[in-house]
Amino acid sequence: MYAEKSQRRMERMGYRFVGENRHSAVKTCLWTKKSIINEGFCYKEKFYGIRSHRCLQMSPSVPFCQQKCLFCWRDLSSTETAWNGPHDEPADIIEGAIEAQRKLLCGYFGNERADKIKVLEAQDPTNAAISLAGEPLLYPDMDGLLAEFHKRNFTTFLVTNGLASSNLEALSVEPTQLYISLDAPDRETYEKLCRPQIPDAWDLLNRSLEIMPSFNCRKVLRITAVRDINMKKPEMFARMIERAQPDFVEVKAYMYIGYSRKRLEIDNMPLFYEVHEFADSIADSCGMEIVDESRESRVVLLA
Image (cartoon, rainbow, N blue to C red; front, side):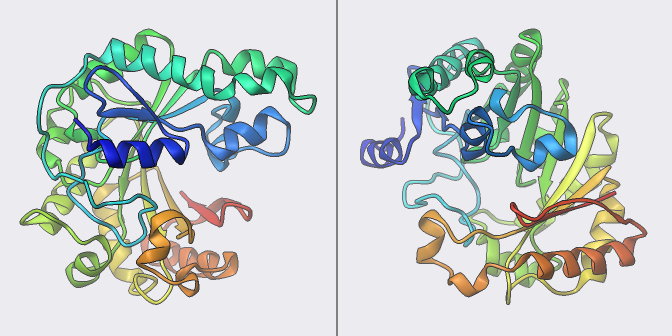
């Protein structure tokens, strides 16, 4: 399904495609590797209690996304805006993803610095970060994927850009944690930064924010802060946050990595103190407060 040239390029970057139709992939997170050698862990472990060395970073819809965000680390040249072709079954995707992660981590069995207990535990991941690349809600059987993960005693962190609002509303199986990306305070900034490829994208995002309060799972809005583009109008971010009623808001710095370096400059990556000040101004505008932070990841948590 995915363009062969793009797939080979992503495999050189550490992605492993799974399933017969090659629309799903795994990539071992830097923090999974760091955790195995006891050199730190992901901010999600600090904030939400997941175990970084047992996290499976994956996506069932790598080739598909309705946006071409300036800050995305991916090569977006082969991205399609709507599902095209057949899809693999949830169980096949999950089994392939777990097996691919095991192969990616097999070298740690011979690594003297590795924590032997963590290496063994990492063979059986317990959290799925459904956020690697593409828009997960475009996968035609997200209910089935979430249910299959939960049947295997996984927690699930589902990240969406909010543009598949009808798919979000139709979900009958909730993830453990639902993320919606909120990267602009107004339509003009959104169109400049996120570069939507479908009509009415801003309205669809706002519809997803209206749907968010109906979920019973833990709910998080994620703001990727890009200096000189969207670190402004905190009161307008606050109005959107109030409408969505999340449990938490993550304000995280854009990182100058991957293909985003072809679209943005290193000066667009804010320092931690800038992220903290911006998060504080949003919190003041919507009655939230800063409850945690990770300086290394340049992220601040509001609740």
